[in-house]
Image (cartoon, rainbow, N blue to C red; front, side, top):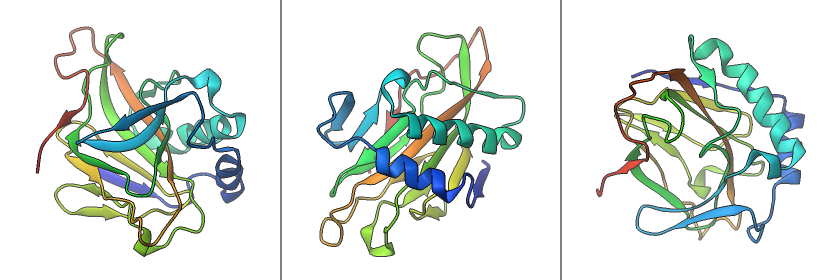
Length: 191
């Protein structure tokens, strides 16, 4: 499995603009995941995402283009876009979906980039990609990893240290596969 990290994948000014335009937790367009496997928010509709966040997502897609081979980015942002974790938030150990639920596509890469400023090591929220990759929160740092077989999780956001929300932009890369055979949703594993 391949993991690549691009420091300053997009300009810091664009990260700051996305963070400044980020919707509050009571934004009516968040999809809330709050259960045993996750405590996070996700955007579900590209047309409702703030323009500064769309600009950052589009810049990110250009920054990773040379790192995803002959795959392509899903600009509809199915299950991608903006993700946010509150204090105490986490994402349990899982494999991402392999097949798009409505299109004949197979996912090849998952891409995530933090936009948070003012995030310290003690705040938590690290992305863990097995077997041994730990990536802290840093604005503009993009992480690209191959989807197949990539068990990963996000450590809990430390409520004792931070009142900050962990804010990330996510993209998925795909290939056309008319016979895609695999999961159309994430597979969580109880640890």
